[in-house]
Image (tube, rainbow, N blue to C red; front, top):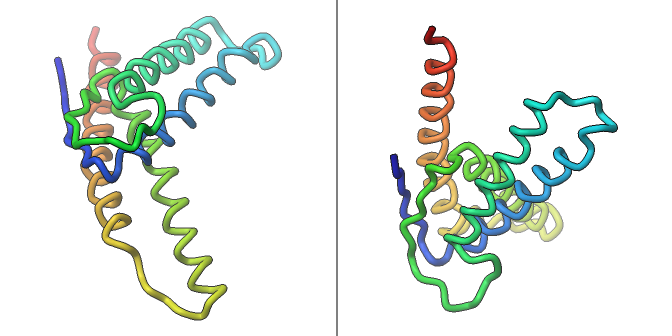
Length: 142
């Protein structure tokens, strides 16, 4: 089943950065399998995440090209990693604004872009929560 979310052009760079973070984390988990004594299931899960993120990055473009347009992103490969990656980017942007406000003594508040990131993050959270619930219910079925 395909599940899409509209990603505005001005937010694509954050989605890409978040996906790159998730891509690296999945590769790291898979690469240290022997050192950490992880099970085959855990190794397979890391590879599944890696493949899902690779697919998602193909959809949004691996690098910023400066000519982005709004896209319909199919998040069905793994809505959880899209949410997790964007959540990191959102918090980084909020922290950046707070640090700037602290350093300058001025508090311009969050930009429209940060508000839009928050709205997209809320949509992705709902989709990720739904996907988690669905997976749990499938696992509990006999």
